Length: 180
Length: 173
Image 1 (tube, each protein chain N blue to C red):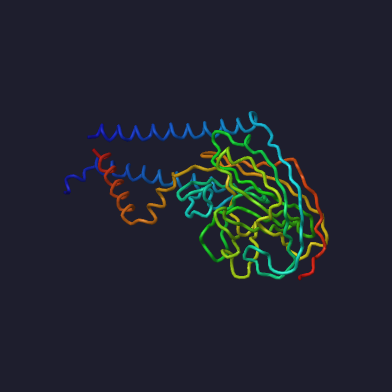
Image 2: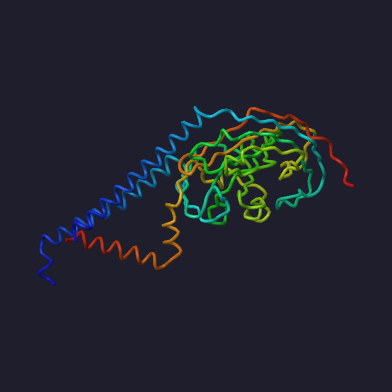
């Protein structure tokens, strides 16, 4: 009886050690793969239109009446090289960065979850952003902004990684469009 | 009964109690040490809801890091809204940072709407310093399901206790 118990204990310990080692090995190898053996993704984006209105943002729980901006854009991106053998999903998002006083801002306007390499070829034209932009101060005052495509790679096991494309699309917030 | 309580037996019992205490204190010290290193009151968390699916499922384990003064858009943070003691794991979708303060808006990947509904009444942003307890850096699937099983099922708790008692008896022989 005692030896049976001891064997179970040893077996469990061994399984745990092997699993742990395997998990670390998978994570490290995928990070090496991501850093040294993948190409830089090809991205191109283009802002079609941006509209600033006064009222409530079109989505979200913020019911404050303030200026908000909604954009339409084109996006072409080949993100297939970002998939390593340990990639569970890719969270891709388009972020608008714009300065301000006292707050410097960065806001996600569009996002997507990509779960397969086959779906990583994005080709979107003239689509409306998922989220509208609104500022802490409630006004944009024609500030300049940049759009960039960024992503978070979610592994099956191990470290999460974040990265971004070098492409930028610059624009300025237009003046308020009067409500119809 | 009494004759069994010879010196050897007491010594054995005491040694066992001591080693049990050692296991407890070591675990506690490891947890608190990790807390100091990561600067987070709870450096390892178990996912309890499906709001970040398909990235995180119930029972997955997340390792947090809280040494960065500012979190970034796209980061997945764990936050505790003041007055509500349920930690929530969601992604940062808005960041308004000044030299003194950072305001954040979060959203679950699997939720259609942002988190304003989960914040306090009339709270429009999270405060990075006050409410965020760490951002997710590493991920291990499934392992945390044991704790969910234990906290949500009474029978699992008793089963574990019985199993521990059984092991204790086995070791005595």
